[in-house]
Length: 115
Image 1: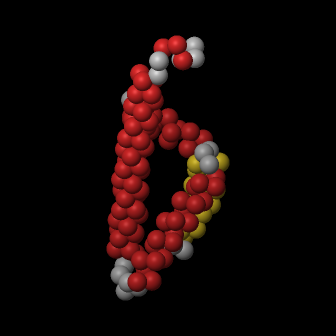
Image 2 (image 1 turned 60 degrees about the vertical axis):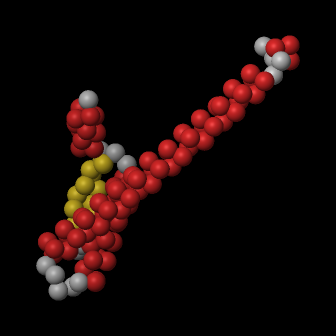
Image 3 (image 1 turned 30 degrees about the vertical axis):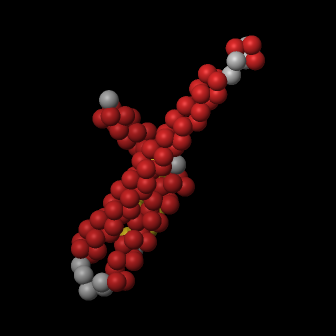
């Protein structure tokens, strides 16, 4: 099921409007459903490449690209972990509230319940 979803997203992206973005000095025509998101992604990648290149300008472009990909992936994985932790915390809080409400209903006399 996951592969079919990715295929649908790829087809939708291919049908999107083509925009030109500049990444690390080169221009690329990209397609995407959301032009603003596509531009922000390209800007993020360009920024990371520039940041790495500025720190180690003697390295070849491929090394800069690989290090940038590693940094971007690390950012992604950290955000995913943060998201999982937040969801876990929220689920625990919802469970606490649910238990509290259940206990309130159990403790309330039957003749005081609103139906």
